[in-house]
Amino acid sequence: MEYVTAAGVEVPALGFGTWPMTGETCREAVESALDLGYRHLDTAQMYDNHDAVGAAIANAGVDREAVFLTTKILRRNLAYDDLLETFAADLDDLGTDYVDLLLIHAPSRSVPIEESIRAMNRLQSEGRVDHIGVSNFSVDQLRTAIGASETPILTNQVEYHPYRDRSDLLPVCIEEDVILTAYTPFADGRVHDEAVLREIGDRYGKTPAQVTLRWLLQQTSVAAVPKARSRTHQRENLDVFDFRLTGAEMERVFDLGGGLVGRLRSVLGF
Ligand SMILES: NC(=O)c1ccc[n+]([C@@H]2O[C@H](COP(=O)([O-])OP(=O)(O)OC[C@H]3O[C@@H](n4cnc5c(N)ncnc54)[C@H](OP(=O)(O)O)[C@@H]3O)[C@@H](O)[C@H]2O)c1
Image 1 (cartoon, protein in one colour):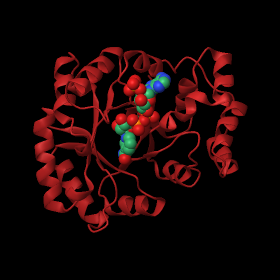
Image 2 (image 1 turned 90 degrees about the vertical axis):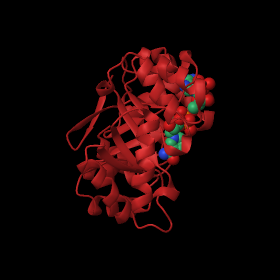
Image 3 (image 1 turned 60 degrees about the vertical axis):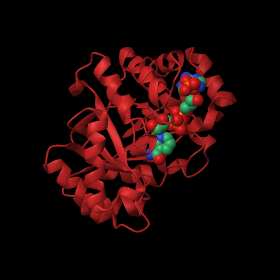
Image 4 (image 1 turned 120 degrees about the vertical axis):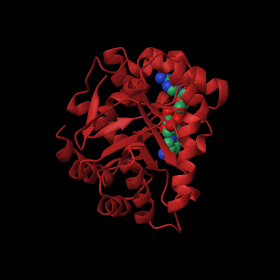
């Protein structure tokens, strides 16, 4: 496993996404992932699977402290009291007394970012949340969250894959010491048929999915949370730490997304 660091906190760079799994399917998948070595789990109030994720951690025979557990507050629960109240229920469902990382799932249209951050800072001071962060935030919204929080904003979890240009957000994350956590890394399945990714993968005996994860994790301050119900996929996604893409290969993958690759080239040094 590789780790990505922000604010002095080491986070397993490859996490395990749990949406849209619920119930037994989710419990089995998370147990399998923990058994294979995943130690970073991504859930949310929205996914309706806290009980299954909690049961999997309890069953897997892995110390709770060894797992980096992230959940997210639904947009409709972002008002101060709602956030505190719903999060208390989340801990019960997860069967734990703290989460490692609590995120605002998406910016509210009615509740100021500052109000939600204040509630999250309170949960931190009470020891029920180790770190806080955001998801689906623009550059401006991220800067507002950073300015409002008494503690570091550890991550901004956003959609990121070879067809999604992040040349605006990523340099800001690097500059502000914030992890960019990539969700939907396989672009709704599009990467699997991508000739460029296949050609690069053939050189290393890797699949397009593995090349995609390698490309993400090789970028400064980037983590990824692919979801896989199948154990074969879970194993395949973990098997990305024994090869490295060259600068030219990184560039070819960036080119799939167009955008301002030149800006990233200078920031990431590839
Ligand atoms: N913050 C947010 O707003 C937000 C939004 C969306 C997602 N997320 C998080 O990000 C996670 C991942 O995103 P996602 O589920 O949208 O997309 P994803 O991880 O890009 O794709 C999941 C799909 O890819 C398949 N797959 C996984 N590994 C594969 C491999 N090696 N080869 C071929 N196919 C493979 C999975 O199949 P099987 O399951 O059949 O194995 C599943 O159908 C979610 O579970 C969730 O935790 C967050």
